[in-house]
Image (cartoon, rainbow, N blue to C red; front, side, top):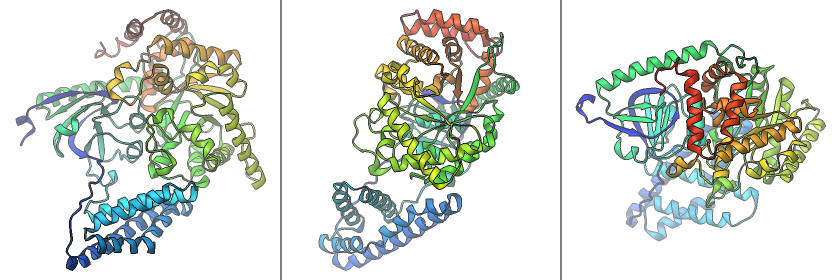
Length: 591
């Protein structure tokens, strides 16, 4: 049926990543497999076992292909995890037990495989041994693939998606987002999510438009339906009319023209009208080409979210594989600095089997980030050695996430010292004077910033987590997204207090959360005294353009005024008026 003959439906969600596109939908649902259970006659049991053998063969071929691809891209060391997966398929006891299950139960092979695997996982999960826990992860991964093959489900990859599709899903995990290919995925829209979830942060980083928090988009859309995505305003239009498409074509041209205006000043100095210099840096995920960072005028990398390297393959890459990635960015961006944040898995960035509890009621406040690293020092030291080695090729700084107080910081510094000693014993070079910083994203760290500053060379305020912990608002829960307020008086006062504490101890304080990339808040942060802002690359030109139209004294007056207000609404209206006064003459669509 032609688009114009269908009813147009306009849905409003959360603007997660900018851009305007339209195209056919691809419905991507990730619900757990429902394992069928039915009786099989004795004469048909041979057929069931033949299906089992065929599925094992298919699974082995798939895993071998993945192993070869990883070995070619990252090296044989990183591919060895799939050798363990292949061994699961050769486990004689597991195979024999499955055959017996079919013979004794008289049920279908899918159900029998599921039952046997479940017993193995339950038995192994009760054993407190790291090696056994790794085997549990291997068995779980292989069993899922084996069951999908038995049930006729194709192994899906976004890389195999037909070109020019818009992903429609309940939600996307960060690892799935990490695999998005800009060549095939136009945009994505989801039922769940928020503007500060790691998934949407990654979408902005790879410049894929996105709208999230639509609640029921998966119930309204079928694959190949035509939809229009407005990632600026958070709108999704199902079955857009020709008139709507024409109007959005004009809006897209206007947006592109505005971006061209911003981009023309991207190479100019980041400074206010009265000559106050501001360091503007990029937040990156580790899959952006380095020239994208420099093209937008970044003065280095202020936040390298290294967990993206882990999420893409759902594995823990070794020291050598990580070193190659870090060295690539450090060399390409030299002499600009690259601030590498150590692993921040957990929260909305898990997916590593038994390394993370499946039943954490509040994973954002649970086993994540520095807590995970201090527990698994083997993983932590692999990363620290890789970062240290990369420091021989340019200007590198190390930053620890989710520090809650001085004991954690000192423990992390202790592990870092061990990593340095190990490299010295190997005779491998690194910068012995490498600068160390702490993320300030937990209220306890903010309140003890003066103590932390004694052991740091810099601070970086992670506003995404700081806001959620201060306001007790889960930032990825779309039902309470309206309560997540960067303009809350407590948030602004806390940021000011941390900046003052850092400056009193003589260390610079930057902002690397999403607040820094929002044109409403960037002037305020500069007025509060922030030394640098680290932003998604695509947002840099607009922020630089805006700050070049502002006097430092104006920003300071704005901050002094706002910090006295007692309600979020007044603060927001004041910031919006300041923004409109400085950019409305350039952007006629802002109102």
